[in-house]
Length: 268
Ligand SMILES: C[S@@+](CC[C@H](N)C(=O)[O-])C[C@H]1O[C@@H](n2cnc3c(N)ncnc32)[C@H](O)[C@@H]1O
Image (tube, rainbow, N blue to C red; front, side, top):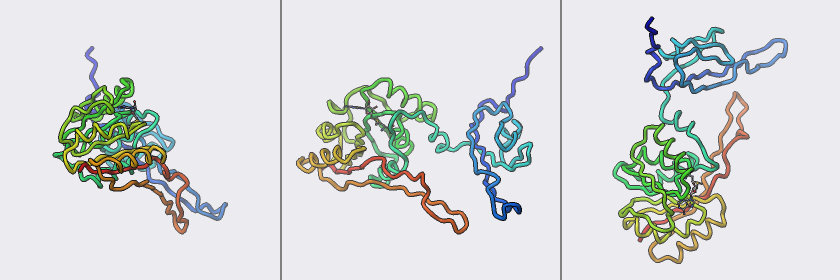
């Protein structure tokens, strides 16, 4: 007997399944209580029903998308995962550059679809992949093959094709010329100022990202004493998320406060 494949699920984009939170007045308690916690799920297997704490969503509803009901009559929104939904699920090594800092790099350098960007180290590829969505070409250096393999796999899973990975130390040589931006996320960024100088076009940006202020000071002081660069600024981007729920309006306890310091310089 020929087995019929579940063709609906083949080749389909993963889905995001979203449930809006809900509060309800409970008379016995004489107050509003959260009866449904806002939840979102990333669903890759569309060939099976999806089980949640708030009921089961039928596979046919997953495949169809839109507003659907679980078997316990909770209303979910089901839609194709966007780039950002997939990006948030990349495999992460110890430290990645978070989105708030990537936003700063994109905004302050203005790199765009004609730009060449060099980055080191590739790590998980979090920065290289995000930049590659906006620029013409990213060349990503790392000295650790295992780390770079994670970045390569993340890029492939996200169908990012404009990153060239190189297993080389950025301190020794950058093969590229006329780069618009060189990003350094390495332990001793001051050792790459010379190679970055040769790779950057005049006016190009050098961005260094360091978790500690001592690394940052060593990098910026090396820039100060280098005639080929001018230091523009060093910043820490603080993202403070607020909880807004009726009259309860206050910063959440889970805001990202410190991730790293960003130093921006420009090639003379
Ligand atoms: C903090 S991780 C980079 C994270 C990455 N920017 C991201 O957003 O996922 C630092 C990486 O730099 C690499 N690295 C260290 N020294 C290096 C060097 N001299 N040249 C290139 N990569 C280097 C390490 O192997 C490590 O993978």
